[in-house]
Image (cartoon, rainbow, N blue to C red; front, side, top):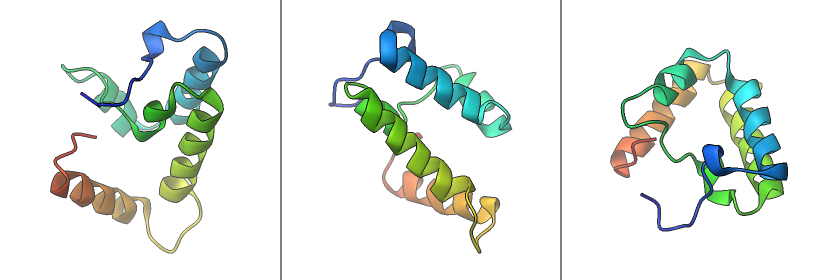
Length: 95
């Protein structure tokens, strides 16, 4: 549970609800996201969600993460995911 107040998707309204919709639409084709969202504990708190009190910042954070993880790079997507996984494990982060 984060120490930062977040507004989960099911409680979102207005602009924030639209941001959640855009993020879900952007990532819907990725199996890793479908599996994570369907896990028993529900989806983890993602870095963009930490900005849910500021929908514009949340969207820009999500876009930056998408570009880092899926944009053009000399690293493969698998290599980037591996780096993220090791980093999360080292920090005891379930995301």
